[in-house]
Length: 89
Image (cartoon, rainbow, N blue to C red; front, side):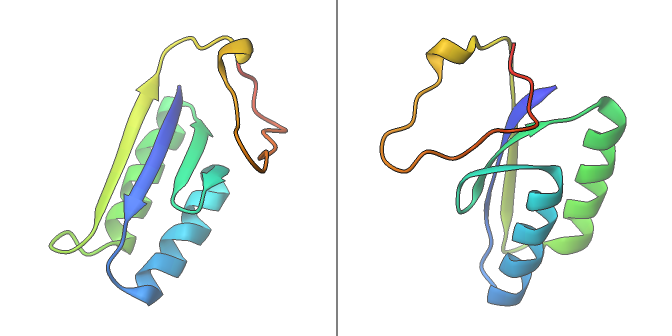
């Protein structure tokens, strides 16, 4: 699954933990927005890792699956973020 992971974390310490966690699963597109490409097993593990990282009463994490997006439809304005290692079909 290719998708977008984004988060809003209220505590600085949890924010750092969430950022490190997200970096392990995807490519940062902006500070709290990541492009991810995961198997179902990895997605399940990511959800568990997120639950163990955030405070469900204060923080919010969204994962949006993206269906087929041809690379020519993706564009960056400003500093380009590399997506090396991701296979976008």
